[in-house]
Length: 159
Image (cartoon, rainbow, N blue to C red; front, side, top):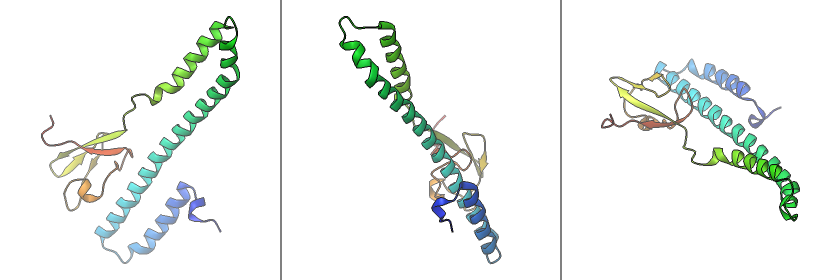
């Protein structure tokens, strides 16, 4: 029997949905809505983290390949007198620079929320309401329920 660690995201969703259906018969509508919100936030957060992990894995593969190639060829070209194949040396430097560039100056991915009357407007174009009102942080929100990015609240003083 597979463990919860072995299940895919759709399998996890189906399992948690079945658990939700079992519980929802004995819960109030507010409790059901709260559980649905928690599940949705959890899935959005997991998907966002999976995307980041996949991108990091792909980048690591590119960098590892470049380092192996550089170790094999680059040092030999530079040690020869005179250095051989200046074009290959230049091209290797371009590829290394291109692979390292995404890491330079990268800002965290965020979604800015602003309050609008009785609801919150997300930076990704959605609208959200909290049953009891309050700030997203007061309601346990750290990630956008829609895009999965880190949630940032626009202060009332901001233009």
